[in-house]
Image 1 (cartoon, helix red, strand yellow):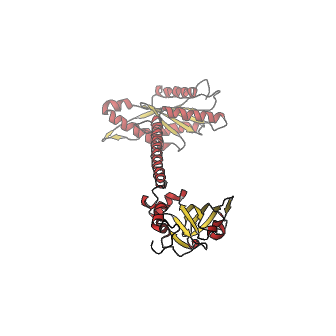
Image 2: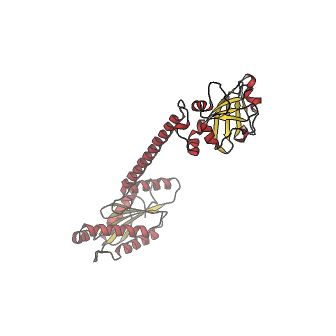
Image 3: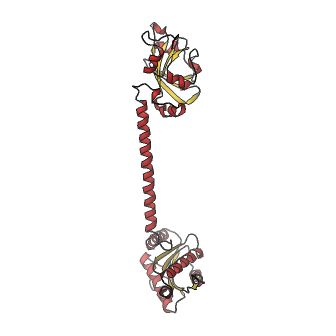
Length: 350
């Protein structure tokens, strides 16, 4: 820049700015004598003639000895600090505290009589500065690796972002696969695998002082006739209707599972009173027998239900409990269908 002093006789301001776009030349009293083009862009003004502390807050100095903190953010006069051999310093932009600077300094002339020359960089604040001030590769020295490091950081962030998305997709697929493996695809109910797992947990809970519970084995009556006369679409419609009615009739904490064909298993948590259990079974049969039409044609079905509570078993096992419910179910079938029958067997209950 014509008319401005030169920190080095062989270099004018523009040439020094090409080598050090973030240089800052101060006189011994801290007044700005010259600065690089990128630093001028960051400050947003022609700072020549202004004071150092109009634009910067000095945070730390590292002299030839130990680092000297500046806890209150005040500016040590350059003559008092830099000419003592300050090599590194950390600054904040007074107008933008979120962007920090770091740099190195050298005193010019004997005892710093020609001032001090600082070469600044954004350091770890590079990405914030690029976004904040719209900086490009042209704003940095050709020898500065900052842009390459920034590109590398952005590339790493992009790769990590893609890996994160891929991990999320894989986790979603895993959860979906697990859910599918535990769900009956036709009705959306739990399947036998899910029911067995839930029943096992309930048995373990009761063994450790948890509340007793009950199971019910539901088998539809006259379902084969619907399938044979109206076809499988009608049968599927009946199964989905029955599934919905069972869920609606039970409590939120109970579990309804379709275990194959026209059979369902119910896990009734906290229900151990046999009279209440029998009344529930009879009410379920009434719900199942409610009118159900498929394309205008009635689909008449009923159900036989075997009931068993978890009380009276020592030890209690999944197989023993379900075997008792099965026996009760077949007793209901033999007695004329459309009935709920509690388990009666010599191993435990009732």
